[in-house]
Image (cartoon, rainbow, N blue to C red):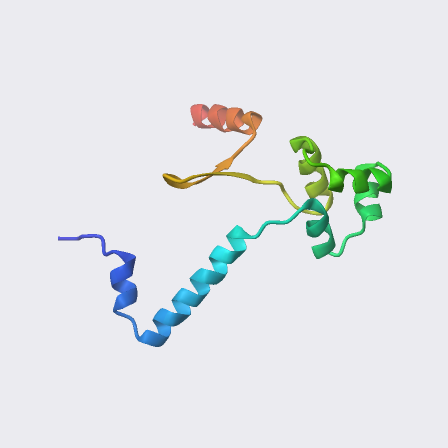
Amino acid sequence: MYRPVPVEEVIAALPLDEQKAIAKRGAELVAKVRRRMTLAELRKGRKISQATVAEALGIGQMQISRLEKRKDPRLSTMARTVAAMGGQLTMIATFPDQEPVVLIPSRLAEKATRRAKSI
């Protein structure tokens, strides 16, 4: 009869060098997930100037400078700014008693619900 095998058992059965490689890669992935950046750090990391982002948004460079210094920017503004850098803003809710949850705008949820009902 089939029974699920815990991943820990599978890893424990591997040679020690493979176990270390798996642990190292796991630590690298966790570090990526835990990495946090401000909008300015993100823009600089992508080697994009404030002027380039401002032009893509149709606003002045000074407004991008102010946006990057704001303590509480609007979510829609952050989403547009990230999109101007070629990305997509994703929000993740974390709780101590469950896996992280990706939050989606309610308009996307409504479209998904309508699509599912039509199938």
